[in-house]
Image 1 (tube, helix red, strand yellow):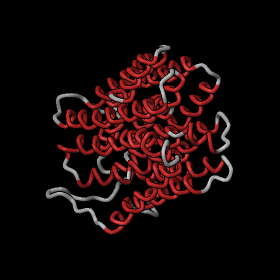
Image 2 (cartoon, rainbow, N blue to C red):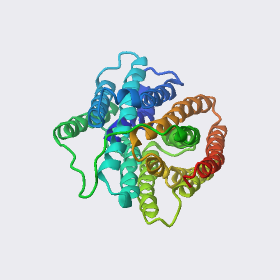
Image 3 (spheres, rainbow, N blue to C red):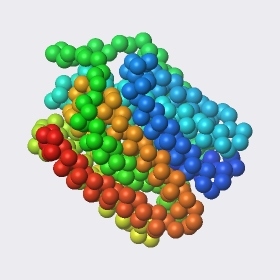
Amino acid sequence: MTILTNMPVFLLGALATEITATVRVPAYGIGLAIGVYWASAALTSACTSVIGRVLNEKRMGVTALLLAVLSLAGSAAWIPWWPWLIMWAGLGGAGNGLGHPSSNHLLVTNVRASSRGLAFGVKQAAVPLAGLLAGASIPLIALTLGWPVAFLLMAALGVFVLIPTILVRATPSTGIVVRPAGRLEPRLRPSLVLMATMTMFAAGAANSAVAFSVTGALERGIALGPAGALLAAGSASGAITRIVIGRIVDRGQVSALLLIRTAVAACAAGLVLMAVPSSISYAVGFLLAAGLGWGWPGLVHLFVSHMAPGAAAGATGIVQTGSYIGSAIGPVLTGLVLSSGNSTLTWMMLATMAATAVAISFLVGRRLREIGLM
């Protein structure tokens, strides 16, 4: 579900060159569509508590998959005018906003506490894996069969995933008591809002770097095929990182917040390297930013679910809203700055956003100590 609900935005970024070659999109169009995707996700995520009164967590997941399939199929089959790209992206973003709270609640209620770091790492590894698939689609599909086929194949996969999702009922592991989603404690809200602010800057930096990695690579003189391979390699590295550091946290030897801070700092360092006018430094910087630097989202979900074990869907919905807002604003700004021809300024702007997230993480730690949660 997480891969499918992320594919609309990753395919938009990875196949931007091919899309603009066949659809008359203005220079800012792709960035705007990506921004609308994340804005739609932010709005849906912010309304998780209200939506939860109508749909239970499983129905949220089914709805998320339906929206993803519609977004992917529509992008492949019906774009008579470029603003339709924005509409299809908006549908996909709404699916993303419903998918995370639904799957987070499933993990908290069906996975033992001693294995949740690994579980959240595997689940969040799906996001860079979506980037890997998008990057691999350039040489394998887009350059041979055309970019609409890449969207259509993912839509078909969504249909096959949707059927068992509707039919299969999750069974909790032995010894785990399933509880319905509870209400969030008021004392946690300020900490969650602060964490949402942190993830807003961190996600804005990391997701923008990944979304425009192919465009930036072309500007550095890297050919389209190798640029797609670079996106795939960075995404694979990010997926592995999320799983590994999730397992590290399960062992209880390192604080989740410390690892989150370290990962975001690595993202900032990678973006600085991407700003250097060299194809080699760009490639190394992207692998750092998309690898270790993009390894924090699973830890954030785990950390928040531990803060509010009885209200994981609502709590992660609040924090995820920050991630979505950053992911909406970041690509729009990135698209505007890149269209001006100043790529160095683009990557330095994103590095500053990541550094700001690192600074806010210290405020998060202080706030949690004040209320006795650290």
